[in-house]
Image 1 (cartoon, rainbow, N blue to C red):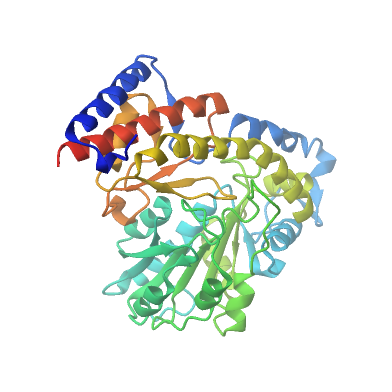
Image 2 (cartoon, one colour):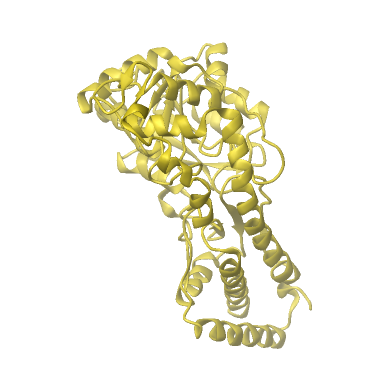
Length: 425
């Protein structure tokens, strides 16, 4: 079969008729398949059900000289702080243990920046004439929405195979209105890229014009390999300190995709000075986070070694699903001569770049056929993909047999959208 762009009008029409017939057959099945978000599957949640009984009696509620049922320990249980320091490679005193969502902690940092400023802010961001924020894209839509929510001007930074385009980043930070950058440094969402050592060092050693520039370092997939061995990753807090930028980075992580999504434990890791500053601000909002949940996670997960062993069991569930995605794309899209996608070894997503100008149409067709996916454009600031090309595939939730049906429909919709575009040239 010739690739689509080399087909004659008659060949395009015949290819479209074939795909359309298959599409109508799929629609007739009345499917309802969800690949919109990176949700852990039931099998993964069942794998960690031991968490439910990690605290089983009153006697289990005492740790670190504290009754976890009571008030106190705003920064988190010492054992929970030590656990996250072990995972991230920083110091316990550089951590604040939060609630179920690291996204909420990231929101809180940006919110405080607007209302009170960060540690080195000349004034609160809300009183600045203009605030700009760097957004590596494709990237995580919820990050972009936080800074958009507060009125920041979002600046797209193209992603490369080694992380954000650092030449552009270093150019933009000369502007004092540029206050920060969003980063997902390991298995980036959605490209699955691990930032190179050079990129990490360039970020840590930056000298922005804004004295309160913030690297928002969302290390969401720090232990989330599904193929191969665990990949060690640099301690960004230590590197920033080494380069004289100790207070520039705010690192986030959670157990949302390790234990129970929406019922895990999150962490904000930063310099000791930042910890002290934010604890003063947080103390107005709360007395403490949920220490019962912190303790049961420490009791269940124990340490980094045990957590990585657990993630190997998650990998056995995740890896076959990513293989299904790769197999369907290779079999159905490669022969058509359009489209490219990443081959991640960890994280939760596959980033698909289809024929420019067709992503929205393809996903509209998917939805009509019962397959829900992340909206086209979501991986770019303001939800606008200038090429209408990038699609985030989230294969974690459906069982393999359902995922195969979803990928068959997805590939059919990609082909239909591409053929429509070519026929209408």
